[in-house]
Length: 105
Image (spheres, rainbow, N blue to C red):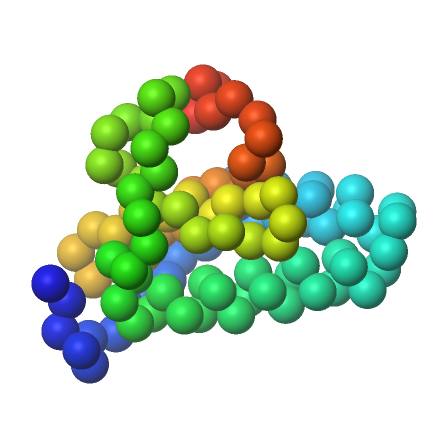
């Protein structure tokens, strides 16, 4: 278990950033406020992973490698998928939770 005061370095992949931008652009067509809220929520939740990133459940989709990614809900339909390695948290994907993840393998 992680130490209470341990800080992890959070690294957002270029792919995850692009996925977030794509989702925010789509939302902005309906509501600019909703798009801004999504980006703010992402920033807040990503920052929260600096402390105790193991608190979130494993992503248990059969299309994903077992016990590789943890999931963190984001907005109404999105998931932040990340992995913890050593002292770092790698946010690799921001995906629509209603989609098939087979392409992630």
